[in-house]
Image 1 (cartoon, rainbow, N blue to C red):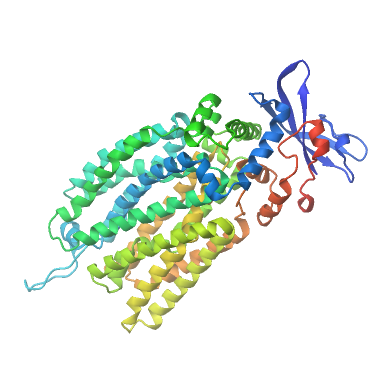
Image 2: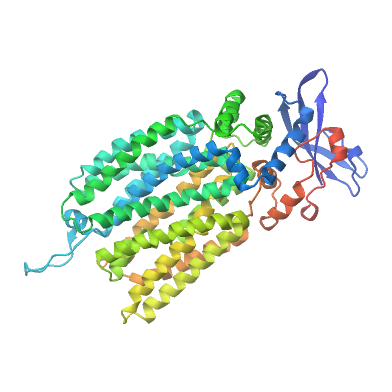
Length: 595
């Protein structure tokens, strides 16, 4: 059985000691609990396994358990709209940072769309047939090696940017890091805009990759730290929505220019990003720093000011919130969570948290969603002309946005684990239908329409389940001290698998290579089955859990399938730590079935 107990230092009123102790007894009572350094004789054996020093601020240490418990209970009791009224500025600042993801999604969708874009293919592609008759229009193809190069040049540099992000953001904070990245991105776009060869275009994409790596995770980690748990899921799911909006806008722009035969049809879309970047940089300059980041750097006064800028100042006790942050930070310090090095992500309980974050994001790349990213090109190779392919792609992203809106409802009532498992199961079903139909109906003209419908349906279900849930899980699973680094490692894992996809998928779809067409679904059936097995065995339920509760559950190695059950038992107990009087009133009862 486990208990948190505490005592004050004699002659020193500056802080209290709080100990998490393990009790081995058939009938252990609160009176028997004393902090000792050796096992006690007889039937009760007590020893301290973790000690947390809680420095006194304006709240006395004897009141800390009450403040922590009261604050977390208030968070759970406040409705979604109540939280929006309390944290309107936090929501607004988070959405502003999410706009940087829209910009990145727009840019990345351009390259994926250009592969199926006739003017672009004529400028940078290679003829795929020898046509002697001048009245017959020559067809061009971007070679699979260059398709791979354009995609992976950016992804490889994203990995470098992500790893640097983990260190630099830890030192200088979210706001400064994002401003630096946006300025870098504006400069890097020049290389893509003025590219006169496909090699120069690849260099431009590589230069854009460094800030992209930071942008794709920074906004989510910032939002996870500035909003309460009630808002966390719905707000973080909008990161996925921003990717969809950016991709939708990119496909819309390409559809407008698809019949333009001049070079401006593929240069102007790059220039649009400059118009987006300038107002974003100005807005980000005024963004408040994360209070959690300030607490981690022992700047509580600035954290209070940041909280005031993030809230409406009414019906919210900022001091209670600061106490919870300081208490959680000190608990993680005593668990030796560190935060300065990536090695800390693989120590103790953080190893499991890093595994979950990395695997959750890897499943995104392995469940067939890559086919939707190559939607226009996939549909072109399946037999649609360019105009119809881009029109269907716009419809596909439109259905994705609708799915993202529906996910807001499900995330409020359904657990993350259940939604994620449902999404993988749906992906497996659609891939199976697509693979079988591509063989059984290969000789009929209906196959193309079936594959087009499957891609749209996959996009819809993916953006209700796997897409938004992934961002929620990856942002809330890590400890607060290691969140930036864990999320960066998770995205690196995703990018590694995407690099493999960028090598294999063009080969599988290109008519000059393997030319698998719809049979590519069979490849992703196998990987989706593996993802489904992992998620069932290893993915815990984190809905409504505070960061403090997650720390305790992971530190005590709670089984995957019992996270929700243990959360219910945590409520109302003295796991916040307590004085002797508090312990006698509100004892810790242990894991019960888990002990």
